[in-house]
Image (tube, rainbow, N blue to C red; front, top):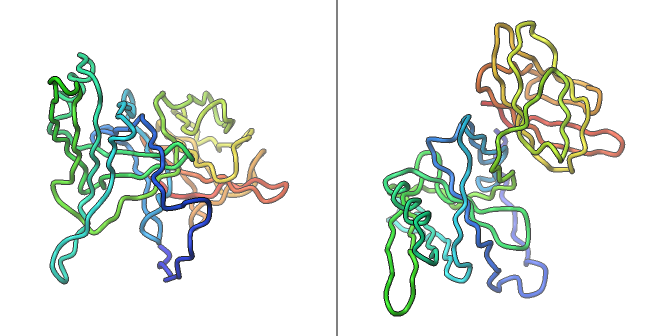
Amino acid sequence: MPIYTRKSVPAPVGIAPGAAKPKNPNVTIIFVDDILSWPVRDAGGILLDGNFVMKPGTSMHQIYMTPKKQKPGYTGEGDVDAEVVPQKFEGSSPGNSLELREFIQNTLGKDVILLSGDCQGAEYDQYGTPCSPLRMKPTGVIDDTRTAHDLMFEQPLATGYLPALFRGAIVMADPFEVADENISLLKANGSQYQLAANALGTALDIAAIDLDHGAVVSLIGDGGADPYVLSGGAATAATVILANGTDWAATKNAVLDLKVYKAGATTYLIEQKRA
């Protein structure tokens, strides 16, 4: 992994960069035991490379939280040589519906990751880490002032990590199923691709691509007697660059994350991570 190089921090640009930003009311919750593959922090320690890939039959979930009442953040604490950065997220979901109460009931005691964004871009702050996810502490408020459930998400064990920045995909549907060795990486197909099983070690080919520069796609293997294989080099619609030039075999539940890089007439797919 590259080593972070210290750099100065310039003044932010834009109008009132320090003003409060409108929060996205739909907060994404990911149950840790549903995750097949995680994105990983890059050398700077904040930006995440890769996507969250869910286990078959599972998905991310979203819960409405009043934007003005969302309070994401962290607080550094601890003595010298024992500094930690507990992450937390406070929010309030209005109403007292059956669906809301069932969600709270069945999230109690569960390890979760939370993705929170604003309404000005397609990036999210990730609260919780693989080794120290969040746990929820709910408080019901049903009186003459309001009807809501206040939800506090905290790390039972603090770490030295600030909340990470996730620029991958929020995926609520099953991965796009690829029937054979020809993969069409298209916006209409989404960002995650479930490959079929294979018995001949057939070479995979990027048959088409219309994804934007910087997009991250995930290929998910399904094994077989001799699984599909993706090799580096020029394919039909893109040039694949794999770490250390090592082929990727689409074994059962293997995941390969690739980032789209457009350089003039050539589109590259650069490996971010494999799991």
